[in-house]
Image (cartoon, rainbow, N blue to C red; front, side):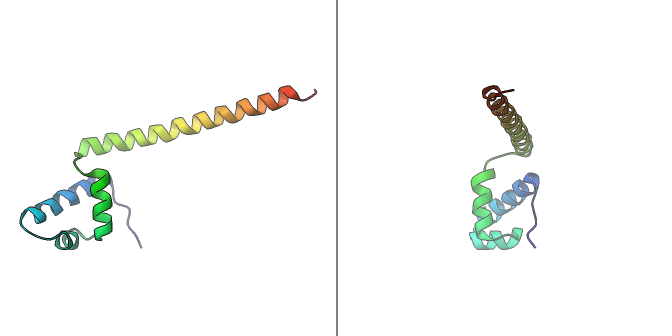
Length: 91
């Protein structure tokens, strides 16, 4: 079963992998040490590479806020469409 890692955990594991790589290890060694596949390592590095813990938390908060605002806009758009449709009809 796949485990969902928190951004803070991912950043910590990426730092650990960087240490292994700096000591002359391979990417495969680093992945084995942190317990993930190479695919996960590269995906994490693409998304979280260079971030600090507080930046990752802020990014997560912004993603939640963005999702909330998208839902609000879609609800308002739906309400507007319903009202337009009702205005065209005969009462």
